[in-house]
Length: 146
Image 1 (cartoon, helix red, strand yellow):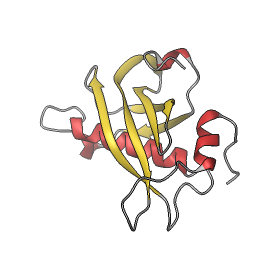
Image 2 (cartoon, rainbow, N blue to C red):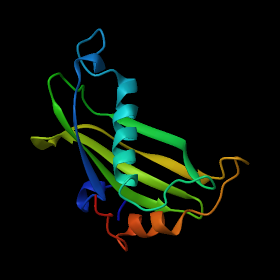
Image 3 (spheres, one colour):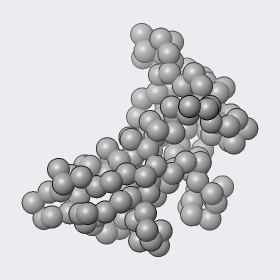
Image 4 (cartoon, rainbow, N blue to C red):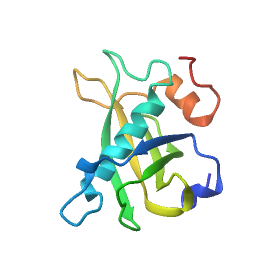
């Protein structure tokens, strides 16, 4: 994948989220900090489809986030949060993202990426990316059935 143009490839996952009234700020659009909540929700929906992404020995932490706000999100709106794997490291994964209007994918609200690092929860030290997450991120494994 070309990480500079995630829209050129199919996303790993697309979460559909409704904008809530409480997401708005005093300027009647979604507050900038809420975009991170939308990204978190999409990541969790994606990870919950993978096996063994979290346990007592292994858990992801958010190490970095970069958001490029392209236009304000109004209310009401339904969003698609698209996730793309732009890099797999030894202990980390970089997920590119796009937040677009669910009815018009050309209406781009935000794009950027986040870096998640897998750590041992007790020691706080980085550990190897779980094989199941690596396989799931590369398409070598399919989502588990509900």
